[in-house]
Each structure stands twice: as C-alpha cells, then as structure tokens.
Length: 110
Length: 142
Image (tube, rainbow over all chains, first blue to last red):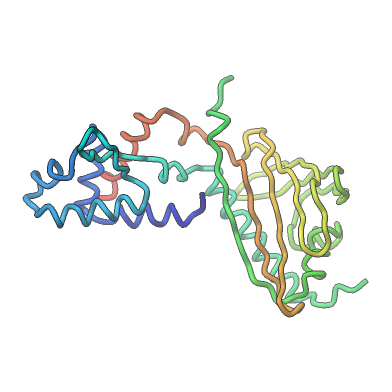
C-alpha cells in the first residue's frame, strides 16, 4: 500500500453524494437501486459515483444470488496511520537533507 | 499488553532523484562521518557490515527518538537494507530498503521503502469500528 491509494480514497470522498453513499453503506450493504432512491438521482448517475468509490477501493461488490450488493471497504483509509505519517515526513525530510548534502559536497572521493 | 493485529502493517515509499553518482550516494549512507552530516543524528553508533548493528538517535518533531537495527544487505552501490526499530514502530522490526539506480552515473534515483510499520491505536480495531470511523470521517469533511 502506498500513498497513491490514500490519495484515491480522499479524492473519492471529495464529493457530497459519494460521502452520503459511504455513510449509507456504513450501516449495511445495499443495491445500487437502493442508493439511487434517497438522491432522486438516475441509476446511471449513482452508478458513476459508485464506480469512483470502487476504483478507490472503498466499495466492493458482493454477489448475493443474482444480485450485486455494494459493501463498504474501509481498508484504504486505514492508511491514515500515525506512524506511517510520521515516517513519511521523516524520510522525506532526511532525503531532502541528503540531496542538500550531496549538492554542497559533490566530491566525496576519499 | 495486547497491541494491534501483527498482520496489520503498512508500507511507504519515498523517492528522490539526486545529482550525484550512485557511489557518492551510497557512501553518504554507509560512511559514518558522512552519514552524520546529513542524517543529523544526536547520537550515532554505526557498524555498516552485514548482520552488524547500529544505534541512531534523532531529534524529530519536538522530541528524541532512539532507533536500533541490523544491516541485512549491503551491496555497493545499489542496495542497502536494514531493520529499523523504535518507539514509532512500537518495538517491532520494520525493514528499510534503499535502492539506488542511475542511467548515466551522474544522477541517481533513490528509492527508500519502509515496510512493516505496525498498525497503531488509530488503525487498531475491527471492521465494523472502521466502517463507523469512515462514515464519521465522511461526515467531518462536509
């Protein structure tokens, strides 16, 4: 897992309708048609939002007989992890230092 | 004391392209005198040999962090791999891999991968708890 999936997840959540879909799915699975009802949105419009959430890995399709039910998958957001953020900043900072060090000390031959 | 599930770990990758030869970059990582100058440890004991150990203390974000580890692989000038343990890995051995590659010998791509960072209190918990957390997060960003 990298920060790309985190970006995707936050991108997917940067929309009111998708956030509402996520909230609905946090209470249980649903069919796409069930999701369309509260928004008085067309099936196609809701489908598009669902696809974005699926691409971000936040929503999974679960086959139930002939039905497809949508299920919330919170895994991508588990990356909002304190130590990962800590080390992301730390290593980024050290590599910046390394870059500066080699810039001003180019001749390292002993 | 129970901690999070040991299987729940995270990885991260940080990359840089640096205007220096892979040899120079590798030396900066493995020569203690050079390492001191850019890593800026407050304390350093470093034996960069395979299966040998290090102790690095750094000041970061307002406090001191002690790190201990063992060198797993040292292959100049392309690969350096070591374990990395601190409070911020909750005492677990994580692994840092530094890979250096260069097309022209003058510019080096540095790719640092840190794997096995354990789940913390935020991430600890069950699927249902996470679903609620996600819903709450969604609510917060409204």
